[in-house]
Length: 309
Image 1 (spheres, rainbow, N blue to C red):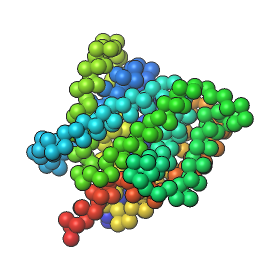
Image 2: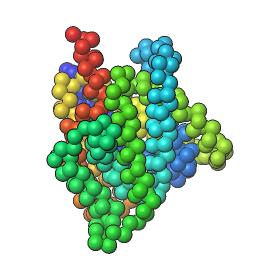
Image 3: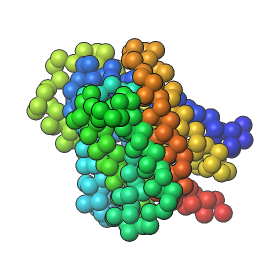
Image 4: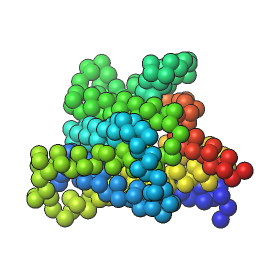
C-alpha cells in the first residue's frame, strides 16, 4: 500500500469514527451528566494520548515542554477539554443530536471572524459568503424551517452549541503560533484538565450510580472523539502527498452521523435539518482554505517534511 492509499485509509477510518460520536453522546447522556461525561471521557482520552506519546518516545520531554510555557498549557487544558466539552455536551443534552451536531460544525466559520479580531487578519468576501450560508443553515436547523416565526425548540441549547464553536475556534487560534506537536500539546492540556474535572465531578455527582453501559458508552466517546481518531487524522495528514486528497472527506461525517442517529437511536431527522446542513457544508467548502491555514497539523507536517529532507 503506497503512502496516499494509507492516508486515504487513515482518513476514512477517522471520518467514520467521528460520524458515530453524536450518537454516542446521546447514549452516554442517558447515564451520565455532562460534567461526569466530560471528566470520564477526558480521562480515557488522556490514557490514549499517554500511550501514543509513550510509543512515539515523547514522554521524556513532557515536563520540560510544560515548564517552558505553563500558563499556555493551563489555558489550553481549560478550553479543551474542560470548558469546550462541558458546553458541547450540555448542548447535546438540551437539543436533538441531529440539531446540535450541525450547529457545532460552524466552528470553522467562527474561526475566521475570531482571527480577524484577535490576529488582525482581513475578512475576505468569501468569508462573508461562507458566514451568510453557514448561519442561514443554523437558523434553518434551529427553527426547523420556520424562519419567519424564529421559534427555537431550545434557545439555551442553540446558544450553547454556537458558544462551543467560539470556544473551539479560540482553541485553534491559541495553537496558531505554537511550534509544538499537536499530540504533545493535547496530552499536556488534558493532563492539566483531567484532575480538576475528576475532582469537581466526584464532588458534585459521585460515581456510584453509573451502570456498566454508561462506562462503556463514555469510554467509547473518550476513545473515538478525543483520542484515537485525532491520531488517525494526524497519520493521514502525514502520509498524504497532497492534503487536498483527504481534507474534503471530513464533510461526509455529518451526513453519516444523521443516518446513524436515525437508525440507532431513532431520532427524527427533519427535512429542515438536511437543508440547513447542506448550507453549512457549502459555507465550509468555501471556507476550506481558511481552515487549513489554522490547523497545527499543517505546521507539524512542514517540520516532518523538513526532517525527511
